[in-house]
Length: 364
Image (cartoon, rainbow, N blue to C red; front, side, top):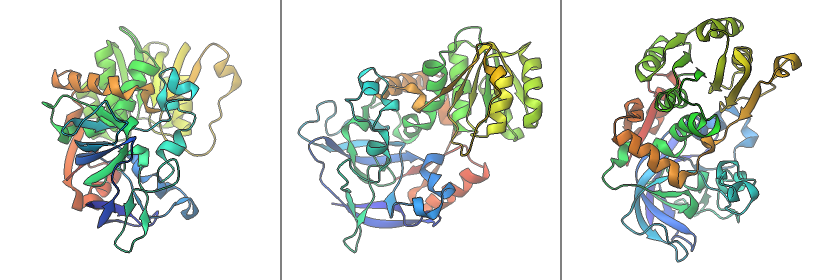
């Protein structure tokens, strides 16, 4: 069948809206009609890499929400007509997957970031008969119809509005999961969140749900710090990285129990590590490049640094949980969303890059 899709033909090119042919789903795949797809920095990470890292024309998108159109013969957890949110793909058989840590799948890159199926085939073909990359995070949701990995598909309550559920599949899930799953922030704890974008604001909302009483938000932009206060931050900071440690210690009365970095900025991370109390833990989810150097004596007291992938979520249970929190009015992540028709995908990217929009969502 044919589908409209936003295709990236060069790592630094604009998206182009094209008509592609999409395969029928294989035995372990699901055909989804996309209603909406969130746009996340990870969809654009190729912009930060040298041109040689671009793997050819691809359909990106990894925060899809839509309706099941068809399923392969091995798929039993969803049926045509089900409303679904799409998340990352994983192998299901490695040690990480079998202990309910699929976000840390040992074969994550093959299943989610290889530009096609694990066997190397692609589900899209362009008007010239050439293959176009598919299965980004198992889904490639910047397409009206997409063949997705079954393990990426999560059934949700059909009463929920699909136009706002897509970000639960990655960005919002990562921010909330970092707090509720990875760091296990609890009632009365103190938390520092560096970066008040979609990940950071989701983390702040989750910290409020968890009962944290001292929530410190760090950002350079006053409008984002205002949002952080709206969603639960008790203190906001906008200081240089070399001032962070002292500012955090003052704001938390000697050091925070937890910190969560979404910036990927090594100097910010170092400032936050210094702002931990002696047994504090920092989680890192920001995409950064280069080296992070921490003085040995800073760590020997008992502090911990934790890498966080997808908020250590098990999507089939965590996504419905977050959706219900939202429906009950306790997790208003949808207030971060601004929608764009898929034809305006480049405007959505520009609005996100400028900081004008926290979470762009493309509508089909």
